[in-house]
Amino acid sequence: MAKIPLPERGQPLDVEYLYQIATAINSLANQVTSATNKYTTINTPSSGPKVVKTGDARIVGGYVSVDTTAAGAGANSASFTFSLGEGFKYSPVVTATPINRGAVGIQIDVSVVINSVTTQSVTGQVYFVGSGNFSMDVNIIAIGIPV
Image 1 (cartoon, helix red, strand yellow):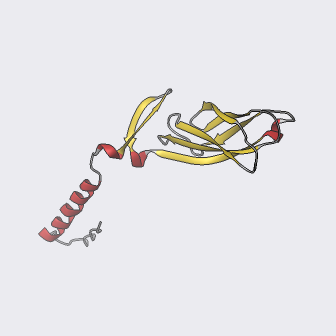
Image 2: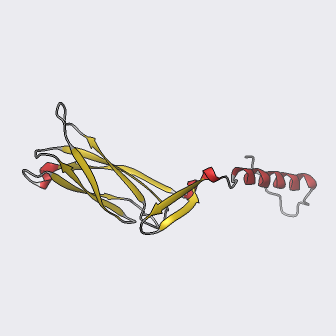
Image 3: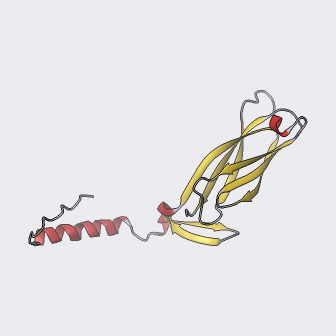
């Protein structure tokens, strides 16, 4: 979109200048239409459904490394905490997915359970069938309304 030149002090306003202003406003109005596909609905147990413009939603993606050796010998689970940075206005919707990191040639049966979601962090547990030393990453995606 073209920028409208600012008038000089004392410059009389003419029809051409008003036409440029009206054209720019109409162009901007067309870009921010109220089409339904430009909205995101975020529904959480703590806040219920909230509808915001998609550009106003906040998405945080990242990962946390989980290692059973840190949980102790023979452990078949390990806990994790993931910080959501600046946080959200309401608890976001969160998905956690396990990613195998380094275990080659063996099958690892893993479950990820999210224990709690707050506006600032996600905590959970990774459960391994069997015991041993496993290193996993847990990918986290949180979608919500920013503060």
